Length: 105
Image (cartoon, rainbow, N blue to C red; front, side, top):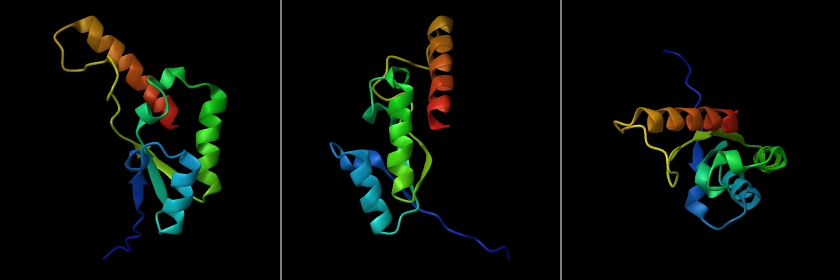
């Protein structure tokens, strides 16, 4: 059987209102290896975040010795919908998801 190495992450939205640096420090202290980010907890849209904002998010997570494990609630609290008959609306949602992918990277 293959050796399985487990890595655990928690979501930043569990600590609504806390600065990300504090969330990351606590997560590392209690044994997590990563943090999963809900984009809406940083700005209404990820496209509203500057390069400096994104760099600070990465710094806060890495300074605690953690990794960004991924994102969730990708379209939560946004105006975008993928399950609409409106092709233009689906196209805008798809473009926004590309921006979310860039944010995660």
